Image 1: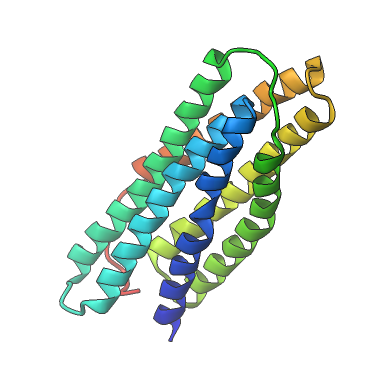
Image 2: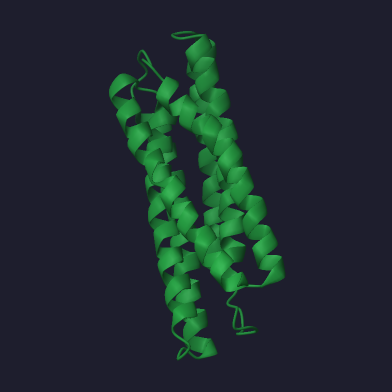
Length: 208
């Protein structure tokens, strides 16, 4: 039952994360905020990583023929995908922040709405994955907990930056907050992504 809960939660993550890149992408046609563009790249990379994690979790729990070492290797692939998604997002955000032309930001409301919804949704998933991992330890669930903790914090930063851009369009405050928001999020993503990628290999301890 606990394994079913883990799979259902991962599937819910995929379903609820899917509209994010689409809505933020549509918002890019209405606005030109560097934070919003970087957020689109981040959400797309994270969605791919979540889909990979769900697929591997499903395969390793449906197929009882996997031994502990093979299962651990597959789980490590899923977790590395999450790490690479974070690093890719961080690099993209840094490039967008410092290379994107400084101009009128346009309408950032779609991105702001998604960011605000993301704060709530991602916080819930963070708590949910943490509880599932404590009840039935599994490396994929543990990494998803860390991913959603980061996602909740990132969405908070993005929301703050876009609120300033929306309230004070064209101002120096909007310009510098947009840059600072993107840069802060990028560094945070790079650090956390690198930790996941280069984390010391674990020995098989459980069948999760």
